[in-house]
Image (cartoon, rainbow, N blue to C red; front, side):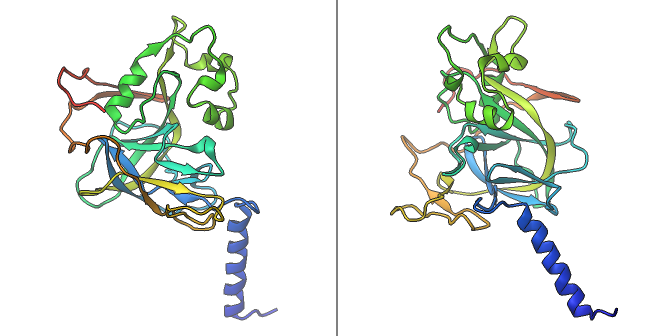
Length: 278
């Protein structure tokens, strides 16, 4: 039977739309793409690149991290993108277990997309109060260790929500995979996320500190700019920076990195006395 070309195209559009809709269960907020990261404590614009299909899209809860590259193994030639749990940069009222920060270790020259190896950084030490926004601080915390207190419980682990939801770890016993031979744990566990992406990173000159916040309840009066759950992109909510103004990015010693099939280690020198800290 002959089917007009216009009808065939319309049917194809309906089928494609049905495929996309099936990926988002009824009542679940649409995922939104990450759009910013921190570099040396300052926020930079991050624009994801690549065709994101149902199969290729890297998603964490309500956040889209980009289109997965075919070669997922870490490479020294790639830049690093760290997804830190917990963090305050990205928050969704309906997904508190996916509150996170994004950190990049480089500000590429030019406007062409580059490849990024993605790493999860999980804060394990309950004494860590820092909201990480710089790779060197994150790596130094990853190289430091702590011994869990006798009365420590799993819910005391700052990244416990992500560990429970994403990695199916719900007890201190489950943290054994992160333990060193001496029984101690890293203050921050840094591990490959299992995928890489392409993205453009650009400087945001004189940009204030901002956070991506998505509310699942639009009926509550608020002075903040809220994003409806059906919106494809989050709005920026300008938050005042506590304390004194942040200093401009300063040059830091480049790390010496070594990669393997399932790890990447970067060594930094400890900060000397007089170095500005947050």
